[in-house]
Length: 180
Ligand code: AMW
Image 1 (cartoon, rainbow, N blue to C red):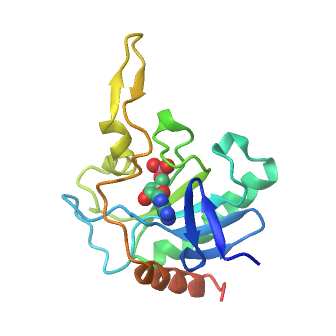
Image 2: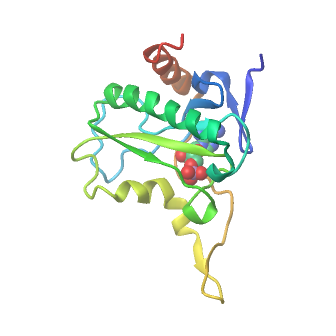
């Protein structure tokens, strides 16, 4: 079995993956949402994991009914574990389906982010963090449509984590999910 996986143009290492289902992969984020001006008080680990379709298609709309069922069942399974692991009491489950919705990696994926009271000053600021780069890079074209002025930025201002850091988190999540 291959140890190389693709997430859009990105290569995912086997160590980043903590869940494998028939049509989906759960993986830790290279550049998770980080504590900043918000009141993140999680004790460890990342705050934003992803579940992606195994088939490389850009849009959620491209998935078959079986793939939709699989990716959301995986999201539910992962959500239960990350909510508990990171001391959450709720979850943000978000899919930015297409570039104008803020999608920066053209490979269908769902963000699963544990939430709890007070993690953000304004609750919906989380969406600003998920889409921040795209929002900053929009400009109004002559026909009045917002268009990206630069593409492929992919959360450039966030710090990429080390391989060791991601592997440790993925191993812990895989263990909690009973995957290893
Ligand atoms: W999108 O803005 O397309 O809804 O979210 C893309 C997500 O993919 C971002 O959170 C980004 O940090 C993450 N990401 C980008 N490259 C990688 C990678 N190589 N491994 C894991 N996550 C990645």
